[in-house]
Length: 222
Image (cartoon, rainbow, N blue to C red; front, side, top):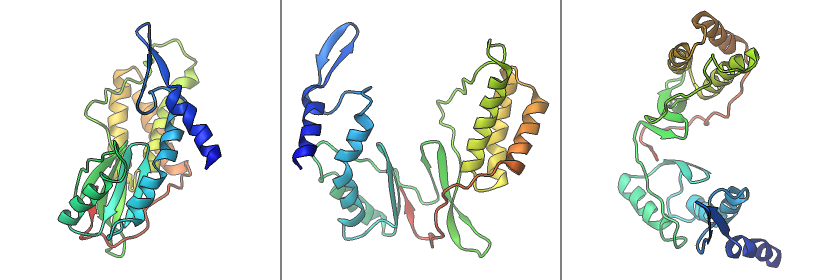
C-alpha cells in the first residue's frame, strides 16, 4: 500500500499544466493530456468496477468499462436498474454515472450493439458500425501529397475495422457503403474501393471477441 501511495501522491499534488501561455495547478483530479492519466484513472476505478459487478443485490449479466464509457446487460427491471445507478453514484465522491437505457439497441464508442437471433432462434447480442452524427469523415484527400500506398491503407484499415465490428455481411455492407460514398467525394476510385471491400470481406481473417450466447429477450442494455 505504501508503494502505491508513493506513486499516487505526485500525480495529484504535482498536477500543473499550461494553457494559453499561463500555468495552472489543478487541485482536483488529473489534468487532461497527461500520458499516465488513463492508466491512473483505471487504477482509481478498480474498486468502483468491483462493486459494480459484485456489490449490488442484482449482478449485471455483463459489465465492461473503457475509460469513462460503460456497457452492461441488466437482468432486472428498469426500476431496479435506477436503484443500481443510485448505488453506483454513492460509491466514490465525485464519480457519477448517467445511464442510457435501451431495450433493443445501444451505442458504445464506434459500435452499435443490438439484439438479434442465431441459427437456433436464440436472442443474442450482435454488433455493427456506429457513426456519430458529428462525424464528418474527414479522411485524407486523394490530392494530398502522400505515397500512393497511404490512400489504399486508409481505405483498407477502415474496411478491416468494419469487418471486425460487423456481425453480418449486411452490417458490413451498410458501413462500407457510407465509407465508399465519402471516399469517392474525396477523390478515390469507386471501382478500386468496391474491389477492396470485397477482398477484405472474403480474405481478411478476423476473429473478434463476440458476446457469448445469452438469453436476452427480457434483458436491458445500458
